Image (cartoon, rainbow, N blue to C red):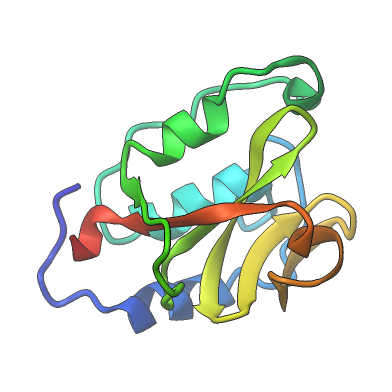
Length: 145
């Protein structure tokens, strides 16, 4: 993931914050609407060259046991078990049968994510409520590796 050396975690968080309030749209990758994969892609591609997000059906997480979403994220982030989440890290959540929801850490436990249940990009607590019971772990973007 080629990146300018001057990019900071705060740069990533600041970019993610500009997306708060954008409507949730399946497959969206624009200010008119994004989903969680799209949010990760548009934020991180602002600072680095990323592969395109693969197309997927809206209910892929209900019928698939394979880890399509995780596999995509792992093209630019590394699973970091037993590490404290830092701003700009990525949290993945198990929804249905696979890891199929992602968020950007703002400051722990707050994350920014495009959440279908509220139909927009929001900031919420990662370790409580609907998200907390689904948290699978933290992935550290290779920007900082």
